Amino acid sequence: MPAEDILFDADHRMEKAIQILKTSLAGIRTGRANPGLVDTLRVAVYGASTPIKQLATVGAPEPTQIVIRPYDPSTLKDIEKAIVASDLGFNPQNDGRLIRINVPPLSNEQRKKMVARIKELTEEAKISIRNIRRDANKALDQAEKDKEISEDKRDSLKEEIQEVTKKFEAQATELAKSREQEVME
Image (tube, rainbow, N blue to C red; front, side, top):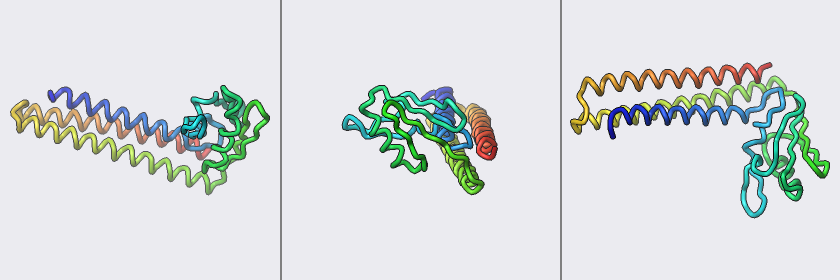
């Protein structure tokens, strides 16, 4: 693999790690209702486990309420069962056409648990980014060993990879900080 491709691949994979972190953080509950809280739920319907966002529109018309409107009204009961079975602690209200979920305010203890979970997810993302850096550095070492690049070129590319790593770790930290602030509001 050409040296520039190694750098591009590392950058691309680190970007994916940040996207995964963003998705994970969106599912963490804050004091406000957020459609991201139920987006990751999977519903057993039509003989398959399907993400809720493929079965219904999910919105938050009020700061304390999530509304789920299924495309097919026959899936209403299945969606309700999935919400009750999840560990989110929500009590869905089904009116025959849509499901309303009232999001209760978080207690201080719950907020602290959420912040701990945010830190856990952020650390996982950072570990993933560091592993990508390690893989890229190994690939550069191998390229130098195979005489594809010079030692100087390898060292300069390793420095670039380190800079990219720092950039993405800083992004992960920033995402975590803003989500922690939202949780603690």
